[in-house]
Image (cartoon, rainbow, N blue to C red; front, side, top):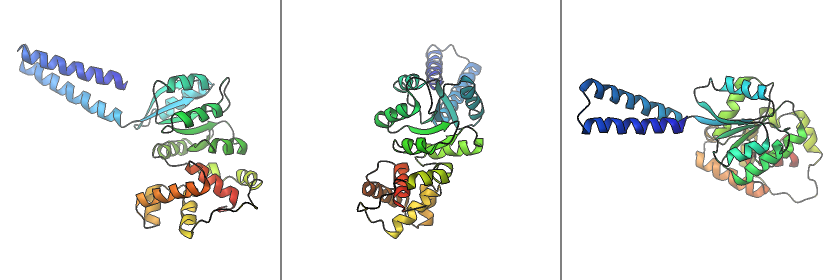
Length: 261
């Protein structure tokens, strides 16, 4: 849609200039073309600000349902859909979305395998796992590859919309992801006890707890009276201490080691 709008916009300008050069455009025609160009420019600017979404799920009905509902949001646009991991990776190699809604259990290349490839080759793409059920083992595995949230298909659509906006802004949706008692119980089995762990300051622990409670960078900067840049620097240093690459990985590490509960 964006490519078509740009092409139409350019062609309209060319037509306008040609008519002016050859003096074949009357006042009414010029006024019409000017309004058309203005309208096209506004449409193009609106589309440039849309969050580009992709959904990968092996059930056509599920894909169409989410596309129909989420497309009603003025800030969302779906650039394509995929029914398996192989199709997803092929299409992503041509056109990269902002956020992918990714099912885990798909034939061929499953969601976790596709997630791993996307994480390694397209680190700027944000991924929200969209599953029919909550499985703590899958959550833990997905967190290692930097997902921005683990959603269930039965969740309220408002929460899914919120998760998409958080992911787009490089935040992690954690309410149903890391505060789940089953996940905590699973992670407790892997709590480290003998290995010497890095020391986190009280300020860093406060930051971890705010991240756990789904606070955005902007909200954290206000609550901690620090600039957004300072918060980002602290998060980077904390990831280095924990030897993890993502915020999700940092939170998983914090649960494993008992830094937060």
